Length: 361
Image (cartoon, rainbow, N blue to C red; front, top):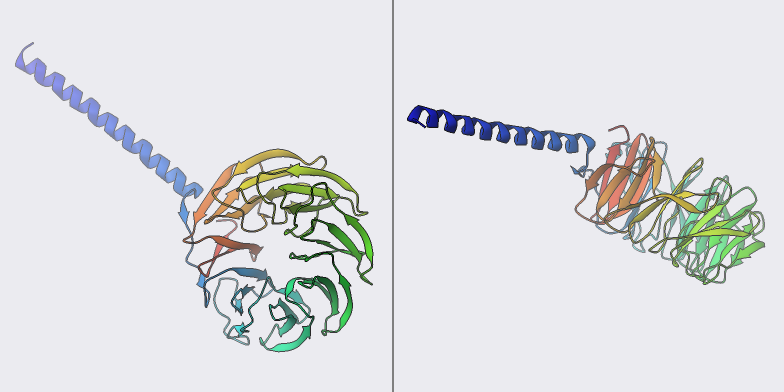
């Protein structure tokens, strides 16, 4: 082979290498673009910084959102996470600290407090309008019509009118730490003794009690499924119970089921402390699919905008209804709450940040 032939061969080899490099670069670029478009590794939005770090809970209102913190702040924000400029311009605070999510009841915001009181805060100006002393720390509140139903650490279940008048009180066999499920006829709670109990809404009289086999503490709120009451417990099970108090079936999970499942028509999604998210068939409590997330589920999943939203570990994950991962956003600290409102998904983290993601983003 002469010099010219060797030179032409080397040139062809260099051209081949260049083409391979270009093809590889195009493939890497296309993959990066696809990941960006699908949001698999989008950073968390900056959001709003709360006055202090720690666990917080988000409540949606017609005007924006309210945030209660463990350290005792009640913050009101606009839908785009800005402090309000008129009326309620500063957080309502109390040194005793708050124990859970606030609820809207007519013109008031009801807050469960550690100092054995329920406090009502005026929604417009952020000033306390009344308080009801109940003898023990208030665990969780549910508003229904003109009444509020809440549990305390005594343990007891209470009903109060919108002006703070106590209507009735019923002793429980053990503390019920989660929000009660309230229907037209009954108030349903799960207790740390492992029982699920229903009480007559008008009087507080016990209607029925279910104690599953090998009972375990119930930290999850009962919710109404497509045809039965669904409630999880610390034995890694999700139970299906009729309105009349008959245990129909239970689904086994891997970790503690400490958050209520999301329900939208026949679509039911639940998760556990092992990061397992399951689409549940509510007819026989079997699984349509299972997805593993990177951390313990921090709040109840949300079904909104045709997607399933989950807060787990430091991530906000969007799933399709068939279980496919659509987007993933990563925060600097663990997530602690999740709410949908105003065309957005709001999520809070333990470093005191609150972020918002547009549902159609």
